[in-house]
Length: 232
Image 1 (cartoon, rainbow, N blue to C red):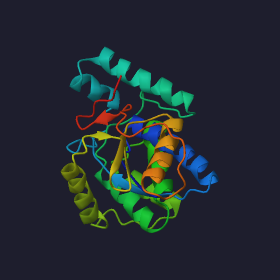
Image 2 (cartoon, rainbow, N blue to C red; image 1 turned 60 degrees about the vertical axis):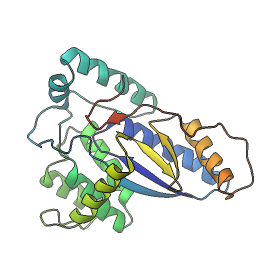
Image 3 (cartoon, rainbow, N blue to C red; image 1 turned 180 degrees about the horizontal axis):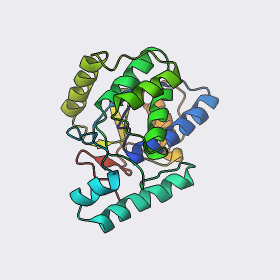
């Protein structure tokens, strides 16, 4: 089964959603299922500048003050902690993620796309690194042993094309899980719901014998939208 996941590396619900989906895939594969994951880029703030501004300061200016920003990030941090993830918004830096998506794509071509994705999540949310900095990205690429010339145009055209395709498909919030190009599940759904979605799509497409599954298609979970706003 092919699953395309649209996400951005500065989206906390994407970090949570990817983590939960990975666990659901492990359980699905333990039952004999096969899953091919394709990582698709999305930019929550395509006009963002990587100038060292803290995400909290950016969110406070955009969404009605420091209290509102603290509320938004406080809830998602609590949910993340329940999934074993540390989100440090006191040090997270607002960034343009175009080059980060280039790194993910180039790493994917070398069989390390998901490793790069999680390295970028940790860099942004845990380590307080600017994932829009080519210097930071070059260091991460070296740690991953990925060849990536981000000073040039490697992967740029492909990422631009995929970002345009996401817009054409109407993707406006992430994470978004697209199963077999036709069944969409939005948001950082619970692990059980994502497993049920895998099983339901398998049943609908005749890839496995019929199984009892929770009807997951069309259910919305927590997301960040294309204005950078994260559900509270």
